[in-house]
Amino acid sequence: MKGLTIRNPKFPVIPAGSTTLIPVDGDGMHMKLLVVIAPEKFRDEELAEPLAVFRKEGIAYDIVSTCVGTCVGMLGAEVDVEVEIANVDPAPYDGIVIIGGTGAADYLWGDPRLENLVSTFDASGKLLAAICLSPAVLAAAGVMQGKKATVFRTPSSVSMMEGGGAQLVNEHVVQDGRIVTADGPPAARKFGEAVAATLKRMQRK
Image (cartoon, rainbow, N blue to C red; front, side):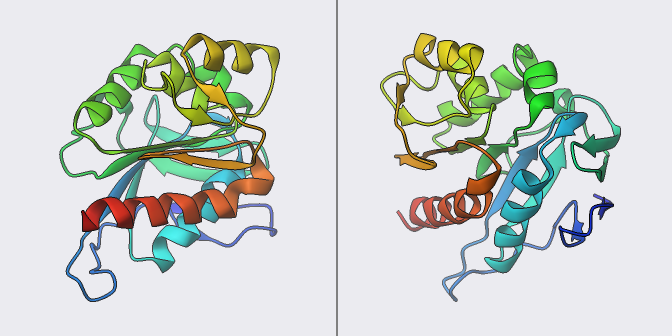
């Protein structure tokens, strides 16, 4: 993956892909996540802050979208995506993380390729995580039945979550088993930390 260029100086410059699998805590674990963004209007800090956590924790990642090319965030971040969702091989990844922003509703909601990918990760017992409007993708994929979760609340997102059987909780970050959800940009850092912690617990089982 190529670099992530942040036009807004609020965010650090972070590589868009990390392919070096680093053992964590000296126990030989190697972890890698698939990160999904909308091709435009993804929420910048919901991407940048979790990626910073993943890099700190030695978790590798690749970023994909619904198409290849330069994806642009709501605040000006740019990510050069080289692989689209339809061409992803889930095998090398330990989990999927779906980033939010208004583009999530425009491009990720209702995408059958993404829903199938989420279902594949779920069937393999892998980590599922989403932030902001994107937990609705998990609900649409049929993996949220009876699960506690949160979401950026709009009439449509709440309807999708409840329609998918999720139990909405009024918290910024919610972890239920191997599913982690968060409700928006202010929770981005804690979301990344919860994803990393959950992934480590799963790897140690």
